[in-house]
Image (cartoon, rainbow, N blue to C red; front, top):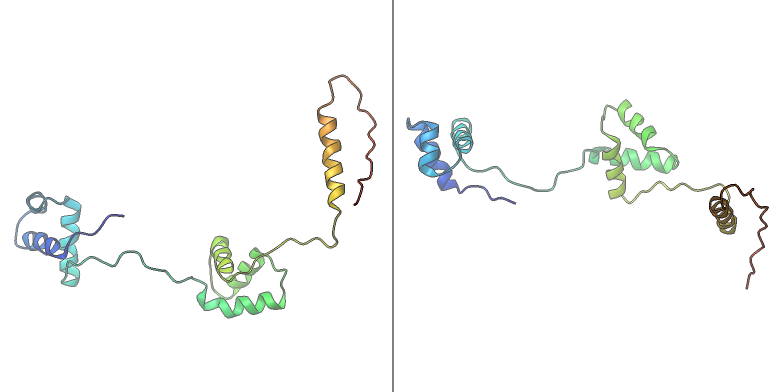
Length: 155
């Protein structure tokens, strides 16, 4: 990642521009871009300093203020969908994207798992896949053969 120019250079460029030199001449003399020279002079005019703004940092989550509401709502009704939660947040005046809500819930270690009402036998799916595969690889023009699946042995 690129570093910002030193404050000394920033102040010298801004002093040249504010002292009456053209922006292009000051930029050429100090070997910086014209856009940088303009920004340095604007910063001095607006704030009195040409210092760089802080770079990077950690941004707070937009939903940090709604944390208690979201956790209470999910404890009350754990099978809420993301879009239902978004609608409830919108009613409270908080407008965020689905991705923002998802990242917040992931940070809170809350996941939405699709759970079936009853367990399904894995053997059933394996056999079904086998039949499907064998039907797809049969030679053309040959009628589909009747297939029998033997029960697997359990040890």
